[in-house]
Length: 278
Image (cartoon, rainbow, N blue to C red; front, side, top):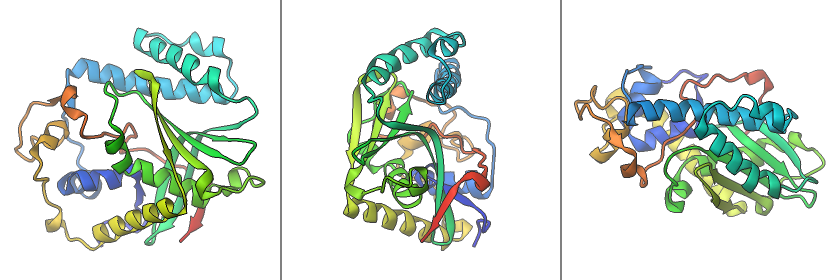
């Protein structure tokens, strides 16, 4: 076993492995911090990354009870202000005030002996027993439904919530067919993507997560190979290390791919994350 026993899998690490075995090796096994950018233009990418983090923070503060006026005082750039206006019009004005809202929910389950962690932007619990996961996307492009559906985020988040989230609202049982996940795009506020689940889909998700972890844990370093889809390399920070080009890709090329906004270096306070073991 080449990963430490306390290694935490996430939707990002699982997706990185599917994306490219060598990417997974460099990032999680070798822990190489390679100085390259994923997309051009660099300045725009850096601005969007900073604004994206600020947007998530602002939404968290709103659902934590900070006033709208106080939050808006700290929205300093035009991109962030546009996203916030879109959010207030398309999300806040349409939310049911009878719902219970839980921002920045952190959970984990144990699968194949490893923690699989998830940080959910928002969980809404409706009086009739429905649970809805919201995920805020600040990417420039609006990913296609097929790409989102195949991504590990759409598998890990609902499964982890269904298996380890009952303590969030003990009187509201999480029924498989009452669970939804909504992707909201800050640049395309009226074009959300909604995924519904049932027991079969969640069982499939658990199996795919477990099978992928089992595959990773059974591999030796030499078996983590470069992807044969070289278009992916344009969006990888390790492309020059792999001798697959120096220039980053254009974001217009990325619609058949997906990149997580979650940091690979996210730190977790595991004492505050609920566990259910499988």
